[in-house]
Amino acid sequence: METFVDALRDRFGNSAYEFRLESFKKFLRAKPREYKESPTTKDYVSISEDELEILMGSSAEPVSASPLKGTHSMSPGTDIQLFDGELRPVREISKVTIADLNSVSCNANRGTEVFMRVGKEREEHLINASWKNGYYVQIEDNAGKVNLDIENVYSGDFSIPTKSFIECGDNNSVIITDSYSSVKDNSNVFGKNIYIVVGKNSKVTYNYIQDKADHSTDITFVRSFLSEGAEFMIFHLNSGSSKVIFHNESEMIGDNSTFRTHGVSFSSDKQGMDIRDSSFQTGLSTHADISVKGAVTGESITMHRGNIDIEEASVQSTGFYDSKLLLLSDKAYANSKPALIILNNNTRSKHGSAISSVDEEELFYLQSRGVDRNSARSIITEGFMVSAVEQSGSDRLINKVHELSRHVEL
Image 1 (cartoon, rainbow, N blue to C red):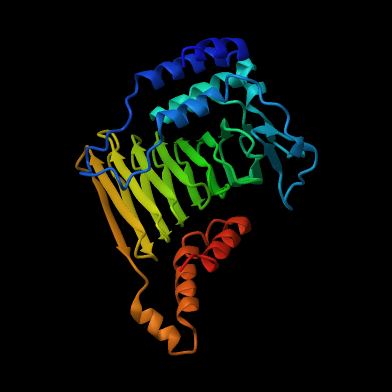
Image 2 (image 1 turned 90 degrees about the vertical axis):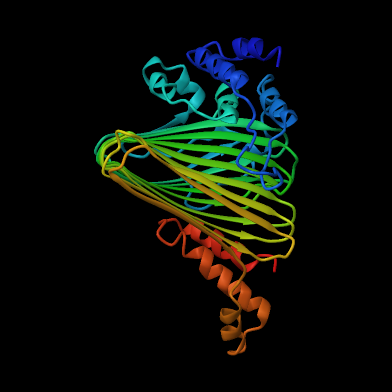
């Protein structure tokens, strides 16, 4: 860490440097989470200082070009593709600007908006200090309906932090599918911050798919900023990587803004998943609705955590959080810790959670009609999980949930 500031200065002599340096200071000042709300830490996914050192150190030296860049083809329907955080040439889309974030950070006009958005969490600060690259998408006001399919592929040869930024102007209807995968199994650490700004009276549906190789560590922060009358709906899927921290929070600044979350996760073997979904509501008449589901198998651990945070100024607002976890193994472990932080009396809010195994009556019903027990459990799991993403508008996401449900360990 002693040489990291020098590395920042040498590699990033542009408008990003001061932002990176301030983010690194915030990382140093932030203390590791102590999890005081739990008598034991076994149900949490912890990121070691060594792993953070690896992630940070990966930014100290330039990364050589990946041989995959010339050989790996795009999946059908992909609009934007990145290899190890580096943007490939993309097709032109009317009223949409697509660029790599490094080039934008050197642009005084665009870069200012990008670096106004800052994080809150310790690991998030580190990624903001050390990101190598990522994508930048700007959708103009009144662009109408826009559909984007983004594919992020990692070679698996090294650890890498990335940062991406989506800015949606006013009066738009946007669907974005953003997938992350790796070509080969690895033990690297991947960190990414994804910041999404939703303009006035715009509706953005963001579909996130994480399915990296099994032995990697994945740390992700998705932070959305909602303007007046904006609606942001996120569907997220986490299935890959041996250790996952996924943090999704919406800052509902604009009056009459709406935030909806539908999340699913599949953990198996000895995976650890910490899925966090929260709202931070400051605008008038804001509405947050969070619903997350998980299938937990093998000896894996899945934690659902989230806050509905309605501030004093956010009167006439609502906030709901619901977690459902399906335990499919005697050795698996699941936990849910929702919380309400309500600072005014003129609101409606509630939270709930449920953890259970597959219902025996449902199994008996299917078995009585000739379906074997394992197939019956798979069918029930598939119905339980797929129902969460049916409204995503993304065939890629829906098909992936179908596939994972059918091959879940029973």
